[in-house]
Length: 229
Image (tube, rainbow, N blue to C red; front, side):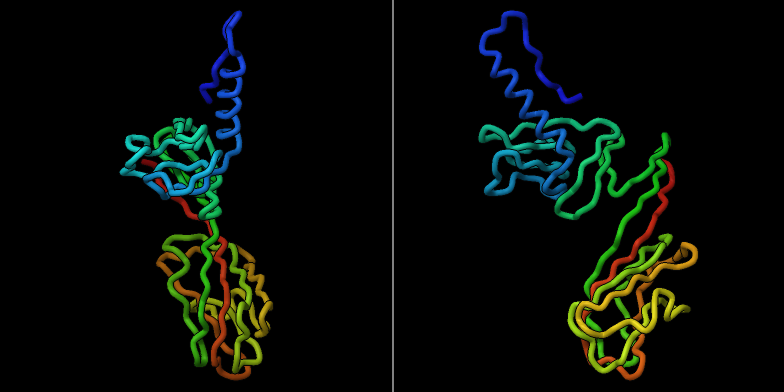
């Protein structure tokens, strides 16, 4: 699968074949790429850098979309991934898996017909708006099954003694009595996973006063199901 070269009987300069094989092994066995969003080589790439080539590839990557590009000996080499190959995308801090045709993101299970189960974390930084409550962007995706929401206060929240975290219909679903000082955190798990049937924001509700500001980082821990092809 890795296309490693083999030594021939009585071959001269064996080190050339061996070194090329070791370089390819090093590139493919690491299971990490710097990004899967680029369609042309980045400036300043160094020896050993690895990428998944995005669509509409150009320049030295022209025609190599979907392949793993690795920088070696001052140039680029490419390798076609095989079904089941996994790579960690350092740019997004998520896993990619190749299904034999295309890359899939955050897949933990994949059927023969193309159905998949995805597990991922959607994270945002939210500026707390003044008032009795503060609503985020719709951070929970449509048809997501949420296991819980965690968070951390980045900049101290003013005006309230504490706060609760939830969503429409459940203002404290993911925690209440949460601290307001920087570093305070919420570890909001539910008794059972909860499905959301439209893109949904989170709601922060002030307790013992009204918000005057602050900043929080919120992370939604969820699973998504995709149908077969």
